[in-house]
Image 1 (cartoon, rainbow, N blue to C red):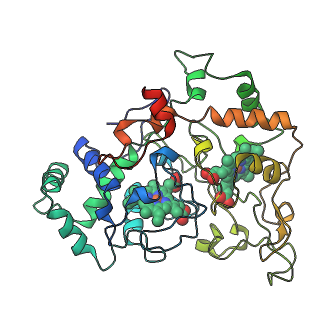
Image 2: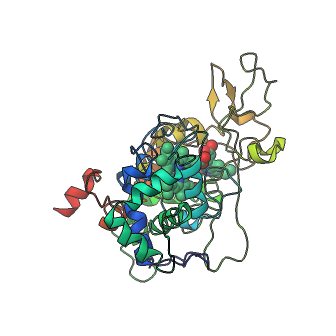
Image 3: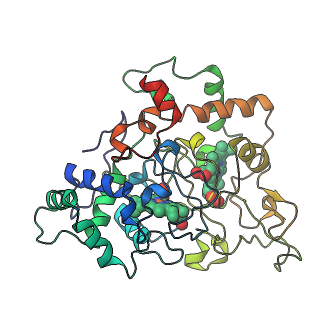
Length: 373
Ligand code: HEC
Ligand code: HEC
């Protein structure tokens, strides 16, 4: 069921929710079907496009009803391996739970199923193609058209979005390494990324370049939330005392769930696979480019915002992680790091027809045409 890249562990699958080809195929259809939104004008693809590694290119997401989401739409790259889903929600573990949130969410409205559940299910039921698909995906059920089954099918498809065939992976393939896959610059960038000077790997580590992973063989919960000093709202315009480490309302990370002061601004470090395709960056899309992210944020040990309601120096936040120490970096080293990030783009994944729009309407990445011709 899973087409695993070399060296990738078997994903964890709930025993009461086994994977099947029929479920994945149904999930793919639903993922792209605009009729899945309450108003017939959106689905998962509204915010997760394959050409952008299943992100949306916007600063923060916009729902089919026009609701603005406070967060940046995440890449779905390897989401099946996340020990927790979302930027900072400790309560959502599985892809099925995540799909239910999106379907039912009222604040903001995403797919708007609340109060429209039967209408949407009737809409799907009226389609002969879905009649066959729901029956084969859930063969033991008399009435397979349910909210929960829609979520299960969407989760099964999302679980197959596994990416591990980038140039970086080919270079490091344990059995047949391709030593031409990375340039010297990209190799130097990789060494920098994993160096004690930059400390990046302490928060973005392992096969998924993300710490909070789970797979079939996991024994421990490795979930980690970190404050990477993006905000330290302080001063008269904000109403907060100096250097109190505050983050903007609705984007305060783990704190929103625990209300512990030390959890202010703690988010889950996400995977850096396919990162060159998922701009803008961070939970609120507030960093436009990877160059800016290295030079103006990480190198300074935190971001400085000099004016406006969010003014403050992130590097002075009392909540920032001890690893956020800052570093000096030359222009050439920045270029090397960017070359390394480019090698994390997995074109096989981005151009994989198994993940693409079955209705053939959503454009593929330009690069896929070149690769396919
Ligand atoms: C309105 C835009 C929007 C739509 C529609 C949408 N998403 Fe998302 N998605 C987001 C945003 C924003 C986040 C980050 C949310 C957060 O952290 O609070 C996200 C996060 C996720 C994650 C977590 C990824 C990770 O690495 O933690 C998964 C999985 C996901 N979405 C799947 C789906 C599926 C499946 C659908 C369709 C049922 C869907 N999304 C529809 C915007 C959207
Ligand atoms: C202390 C832990 C920590 C360290 C060290 C760290 N990061 Fe991060 N990183 C995070 C967290 C947490 C986020 C998400 C923060 C947010 O959204 O507010 C993040 C986000 C990112 C993102 C944006 C991801 C996205 O999808 O938008 C990139 C790129 C990134 N880090 C690269 C790096 C690089 C390069 C380094 C080394 C210079 C590094 N990180 C060091 C914790 C860390």
